[in-house]
Length: 404
Image (cartoon, rainbow, N blue to C red):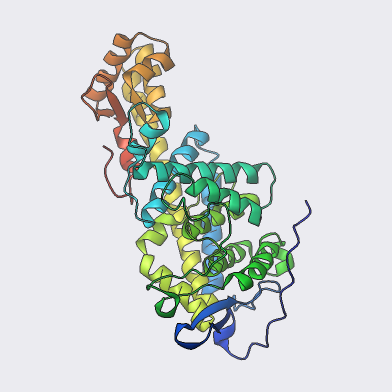
């Protein structure tokens, strides 16, 4: 596929300091309203890195854990189910970093449309994230490269109809933004102004679609640099963090490193939020690419290991509960359990329809599963709703809020 063309960027000045490895701070405007914005260096050619010692060990460990995670997907009895639920967890975590409060059960209920949900609630924002994620992953699966156009499409799905919907969804900014403070002059960080941003984005897109061997760097290093550069450019008025986190997964899936989209860094970044922001800023102020990459690779290794363990816990849970159901149970009870396993949050009416039984039969089976400790009711209305208790408990690790 032919890559879009972009305006040529003037050749950067000779780097004279380690602090300028990632770019330079350039004064904008004049007089009392002046401020310094960061102009990132080109990624083509990529920065020269010291990939040896601890950083090489970090690359190897992250690669091993990614390999274990990828291999685990072959052992799952229902890979699609696990991918779907893990994506929901990521949608919650990534949205929580931006200040939302919702739960897995809220999200699933909203997706099913089984119970009324306030359309202005946080769960709609989480559902948008999930929609954007699924769209991007499908495009990558279909062979579409990770381009600026794809990122704009993701951004539009992310922000339409929710907070940030007035911040030009699907369009790169045409005004100066900043992080922290009340104006660029007292901000913690000021990204490149629009007239510098366009050229930086063109270079960024070329980097995304360059072969890792051609760049002379391991794929994991390329994804780490890509995330940092995207956050540094900060091309949208809102939603940069969420798009930047999705970018990592898109690149790993597009390269074939992961067969299934099971690596999401939001939990790691949420747990180390302050250090994450500090180490990204050190790339800009001190040119410390190696410090950022060491942090990033540690996150990849830890998150991949956690995902592998979660997959194994869920396989063990399914086997245990299936044994409980089949011991002294009926064929109907087994079918209802399989429905619960697939959907995680169910209503009596939907269960009766899905399994092909009467409402009273479905209600009886769900009460039996509740008595066995497999499901738990979360509403006392006529439309009784149950959730797969231990399943949500396992996936809720690290997610704020409870199942109900």
